[in-house]
Length: 195
Ligand SMILES: [Zn+2]
Image 1: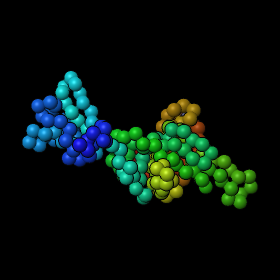
Image 2: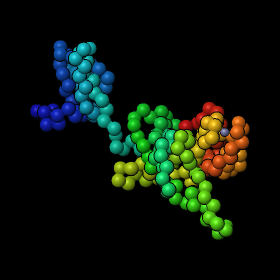
Image 3: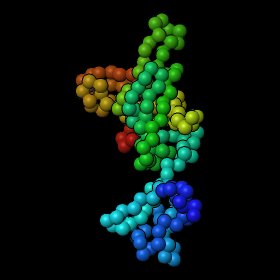
Image 4: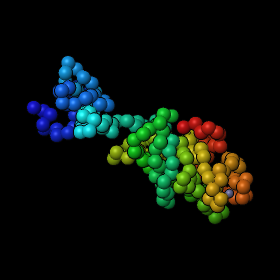
């Protein structure tokens, strides 16, 4: 049978067990004594509860170009940053996805002003809203060029208190007087944060 070939991988409708053997768990259903899968994924058997369930496969087509995501900056490099994605199009996303935020053009300064001013568009720990602009090579490529995209919340690098909006490109700490650069989303500082 085809089940054997795919080992533990199943597709919607695939037979998982007979209901005398197992109870239907999550992402399964009981159909006339046969437990079948509701989704594509891998089979999980719990010998204690005698439940059989399916862990959904992470759909590669979940993210699309022009979607937006909100997450936390985990690490920054010269021209990019890793963002752990927590919200996708405004809805919580419980799967473990990271995107690559492109900072090209944001961190260099260099608008003909003397001495290219170094700015810091994002820092580790910032909460950022980003646009998906490419999915090349299975990587979720993000940018924050639009006015609605950018940092929506950040903490002071010195004392750890929430930073307040200073100007269009600056945030300030009311606690210790620290001022930092950021590429801010238009609604930076709004509570609660809109993902
Ligand atoms: Zn501070």
